[in-house]
Structure formats: structure tokens, C-alpha cells
Length: 308
Image (cartoon, rainbow, N blue to C red; front, side, top):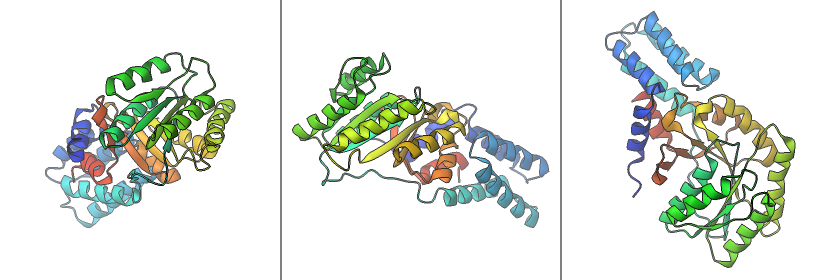
């Protein structure tokens, strides 16, 4: 139904220009013979451009340079394998497969993030995906702050055939969250997805509103929201790490969704966040279609970047 995750990752990075795999592919062509100092410098530039973060890029470069020092016959494919091995090691434990929990009905997922990250679109795609997997889903339009948010998520819900709870612009977002969870319980839903407002992570009063949503839905279920997933724009690169830190301190994030990987050269942003906070990656956005929201696969991600 959803197609090959490996193929989706490969297609995504192939379409991205200028993207990391393009830079690495160019280097790969130069590496067809042997590595030299010039191609090592170009590889260094490509790694930093991908926004893996200084620590990860440094580790990859150090291991490739060591291998080159020990073997002057080292080629591009060898360097790619070394880079893939380092990235696999750094991302150990980063996958967070979402499996149904029958003890929670509904299972409450709060999506959090700043304006422009693709959160509302992601909420709709996630609802559709879980619906396609056979789960009864209810969307909560808790972003009452942004004027067009209700219209946007209503449009997605109608298009995808997903039930939704909405309110007027300016309404109490925590009240909408409460109504959503309460309705989900009454309708026997498996999952309630709360699309919260695009909180500015530098504004403490808005972070307090997120905490209020947690307190309010906690009155219906002391464990809710069971999942607090941060949605970040993959094109922001290392800037998303600071976002993640602030939100994590405020609400205790349990997962990460990285969007817009089909249109950025900074596909390494999720590496930096995971390395800094050890927040696992639940899903990634690989395109505009509903089925382009895919569970994160470390193997597919590394293969797509390094071709190794």
C-alpha cells in the first residue's frame, strides 16, 4: 500500500537539488580512480553542507582520512562505506516504530512545533496513515491561534475522509484538545491526534499554553498525551536543534517528525537533533502526497545518502 520505504528515500534525495547525495555523487565520480587531498576537501564541504553537525561530520572525516593514510588506493566507494558505518553508529537507537497500544483508548498524540514546519499537513497525513492501517482516528484542530489553520486542516480531513473536531478562531486550544479526547473516547477511537498551534519556541507564554493542553487532557487520562512529537522543517538544519531543546525542556518530547526532506540540502538535520537529545525519529516527510509521510528507517536513510 505504501510502497518501498527504500525507494521513497532514494527518490526523495534524488529529486533534491542541491542535496547531499548530489554533492557526494559528484565526489563519487572524482573518486572513481583514487582519493587525494583535493577530493577529501570536497567531501568535507559536502558533509558540512548536509548539516549533520560538527561532531558527526568530524567523525566521518577522521575515519576516512585515517583509512586514506593507511591505504593510498582508497576509492570513493570505500569512503562511502566508511561514512555509512559512522552514521549507522551515530543513529543507533534512533528508530521509533509506532505500534498500537490496546491499553490506551484513545492513544493521544500531540504534534508540536513552530509555524511553517508542516505540522498541520503532517497531522492530516498521520491520521490518514493510521486510518489506512485499520485504526479509528479523530483529529483535533487545536491550532486556534493561526487564522487559516482550521480551514487548512478541515480541507485535509475532508479530502482524506478523516473525522475532526474543530472550534472557532481564537477559542481556547486546551478546550478543543479536551473535546477531541472526550469525543474520541465516546466514539471508540483508537487514536486522537492533536494539531497544536505553531508555537514560537522563544515565547514562554505560548509554551505555557502547550503545558496547559497536557494538564487538561490529563484530566481525562492521567497518561495523556501519550506521545509528544516535535515536527521540524528539515530545511532548517542545525537551527532545529535549538527548537528541539526548548520544546523538550517545556513538555518532554517523546519523538520527532522531520518534514520537507524532499526540498532541502540539509538532510542531516535529524542527525544533529538525535545526537544532542536522543529523541527518536518516528516519521519523515518525503513529499506532498499523503503516503509520503513514512516511518523513519535508519538503513534506508543511510543508504539514500551514501549509496552504501
